[in-house]
Length: 189
Image (cartoon, rainbow, N blue to C red; front, side):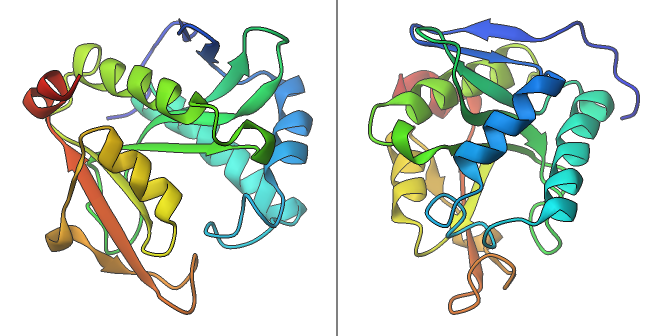
């Protein structure tokens, strides 16, 4: 699918706004998320070229598919906490083309339920607005916080979809996959 025309995206939850990126979001996003702790399981802190490449990819997903990993803004103070949203899986060896949910929040936003709140909204959007047949989530085996959230969302482990990629955890290069379908999502809520 190419050149999907989608109006500016904005979705509000109780405490958050998931929305399209603005140019002035990027400095705050990178300051908060391009840290050793946040990037531990994501290949490490990004240099300027990697940051620009990531920005370009996030913007291209919206253009190509009508959805992306959206900016996550906290309603209370307008702070950019990170991203959460939907893209098409594009990891070599993975379930390429399948709708994928992902999140990345700055460290001071961890443990407050923001990731779950944003992910819940994103899954609702995947199944209601985009009629997804399945949504996957990817992480490394040692990122217990991430796959813990996947489980709390009602996703199930899909060992049949696991694949090798040393870009994110050279010591254990297995990317593990969780997935959920619309019926399971409806019953897990």
